[in-house]
Image 1 (cartoon, rainbow, N blue to C red):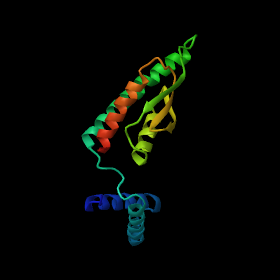
Image 2 (cartoon, helix red, strand yellow):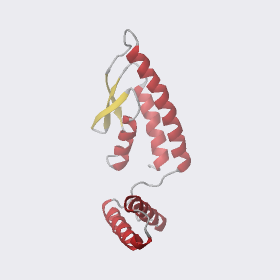
Image 3 (cartoon, rainbow, N blue to C red):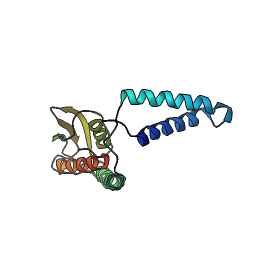
Image 4 (cartoon, one colour):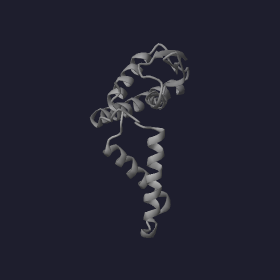
Length: 158
């Protein structure tokens, strides 16, 4: 699927912004920055023709809010379990079947999942994510399924 002009321009602006952050804001260096951004944009289009079907900012905001809330709640739960006199843990592995196909979207979802306290993706096998959980009696698969649904909606995965 082809890139839209807006998508190409957005990439170029991001690369130019990165260049400005690294090189500084001197007016005499702007032509070099424009050339560097153009080259970086060309390379990124060749290597990653389309990074995502299309971000949906409302769903992305919902994902961020739910992710932040989940991180705080899970962080306190992990701390409570780890710091209690007799730790309340039942560690083990959970197999979570993924609906996201192998590629950038799946890698991004795995990275996002790794940031949640209490569950850590350790690998993928046969379209499933292998997750180490601090307590396998908790609804780990249900939480991952909800996160996957939100992630898919946020990135426009179909």
